[in-house]
Image 1 (tube, rainbow, N blue to C red):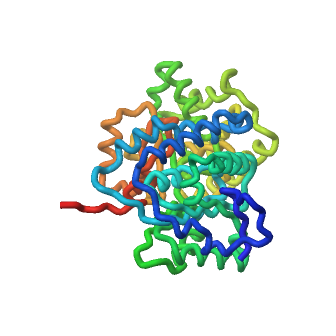
Image 2: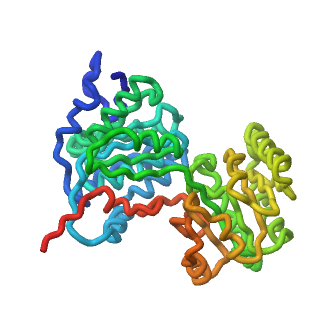
Image 3: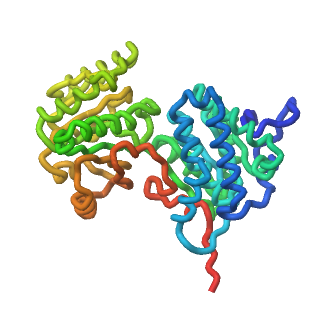
Amino acid sequence: MKYTLLAPRPKEQCAELRPVYELPVWYQLPLSYHCDSTIEFLNHISRTIMQDKECRGHSELVALAFWLRASNLVEFVKDSPPGHYKALGTVVHFTPSNVDTMFVYSWACSVLAGNNNVVRVSERGGLVKEHLIRILNQVFALPQFYEFAIRNLFVTYEYQASQGKSITHALCKQADARILWGGDNSVSTIRAIPCPPRCRDISFADRYSFSVIGSEVMVDMEIAEGAMTNLMKELTPYNQQACSSPKVLFWIGDSRSLEKFLSLAGERHFEVLPSLTRRNEQLVTAQSLQIEYAASRVHMVGELCAIEMTKVNDKMLSLHSGNQVLFCQCVASLDEIAPFISPKVQTLSFAGIAKPALVKFMAKPSITGVDRAVPLGEALSFSPVWDGYELFSQLSRRVVIR
């Protein structure tokens, strides 16, 4: 079964690799739950990224390095559920192809839980993935992290090829847990593959997110500019392909105040003209919406393409291709947003809204979606509580001692 071992790199280049199910990772005892050496290991990855000039040129890697700092991880550990926990064993990760760094966050949570890990990395990807694998190999090669090098494996193979399917079946056959990133179809396909009876599945399937901004932000220009900065922070990384990247903006206010807010994207300190390819993609999306749904106005401002609709619905999202496009709807109150919220909604980022009002709105039984409500600018900030899963408890077993 043909695959490529990405990390850790073998010391000697073998003409033929052993079958993936025979590699040493499967025979190692897991490490302790939330141990200090694991935090030191992940913190060293953080430092190595930040010391690397090429990595510092990619905002996704800088954000990852910031997240992997020891001080940040210690806070996550403090907030985790109390009790006695042990690792599950070996966790198999199937990573997304559209967001190069996202799988590292769930891998880090699994490592913190003490698990061994086999990570199937998409054969697609660019410089960010290459830099990430290079950094991992640098850290795995250090003698003090040998125990992690033998317990973690990053591989890639052609997922759709017959040999690739055989590898996927072999990985699933031995998994104590599977972390599945991808679209609904790909996640369902892997979930249907036989696995041990006590294997746990953590599925990160198709989701979408939106932002809600109250027109009160326009009362103070400094607050308004801060809101625009935070909105662009959520739209720019990953070409808006992450599930937590907002694709819709609900503006609590009228069309005139929305236009004034959107104009801030064209101010001198925000203005970055998009590439010709991106602008063309934005125009295609806008034209498609005009034809199918009669968009009322299109605002091309700086990098942003904001398409104002009379009413947004989830069917429109099939026309959304990223590229810093926002579908916008003006509403009078939070209650008007409720029909849009389905179980598919992951993150709601907000500004200009009183938190008690948001809490009251979210508590309504009719709100069947939204796993996270975060201040505008934090939609892409990964947390060990993600998509409704508490990852530390999902990736470990609780031991009751009476």
